[in-house]
Structures are given as C-alpha cells and as structure tokens.
Length: 88
Image 1 (cartoon, rainbow, N blue to C red):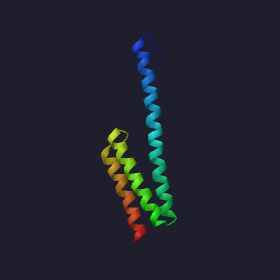
Image 2: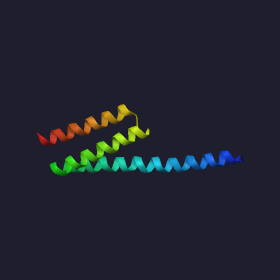
Image 3: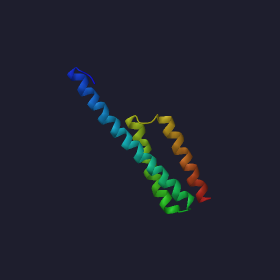
C-alpha cells in the first residue's frame, strides 16, 4: 500500500477505471454472444438488430481504447460474414 497521498489516490482511480473497463468489455462480449446465438437459431430479424447493437458497442470500445481499432474491424467483419451467410 502506498504511503504518499497522491499515490493512494492514483491506486483508487486505477481500481475504479479497471472495474469500469471490465464492465464495458463484459457488455460487449455479451452483445456479441447474443448475436451469435440468434444466428445459430436462424433468427434473421433479431440477428440484424443484435448485429447493429454489437457493432455499435465494438466501435465505442475502440474509441474508448478498450480494443485496438483493427481488432474491432476484424471482429465486425467476422460478425457481418456470419450474418450474410444466414441471409443467403
């Protein structure tokens, strides 16, 4: 445990931000899983809505620095491929 006041504050903010990032990543993973379940069950309409939501959350995660933008682009591309395979 740090002795200096600024270091104590820093550890508190670091912990707070770590918890926020964990919650945000969890929400993103949950939205992606919901989409994948919809695709697996061949629910086109709900899959479209869930895809839109998942892509929006992924983009927000890239903007906030949770994920690298190219990693997000790759994930979105893979999700789109699954959705397009469902439609054809």
